Image 1: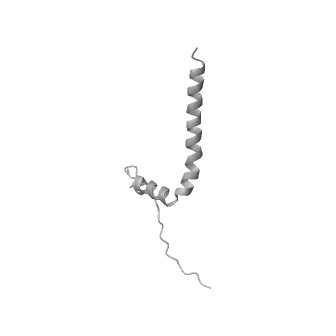
Image 2: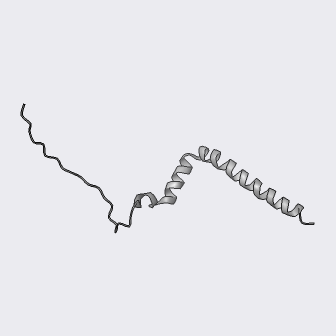
Image 3: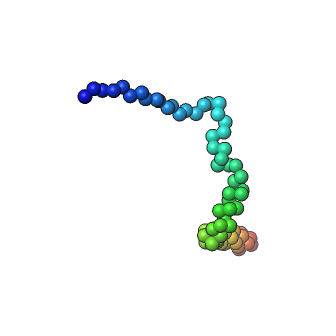
Length: 72
């Protein structure tokens, strides 16, 4: 069996050092994307944010209470 030559094309991807827009699509309309994700999945967002906000507010309350207790 004879070998037939196969023409190959090399594709080289590189990033130019002068390229400034690395991921422009990621940051484009970011607030709209967040709004869309939260309001489409509001129940999951509530389950995620409620414990975080509750814990943060409890810590702030506790720190303020400690400051007032050590006042005198």
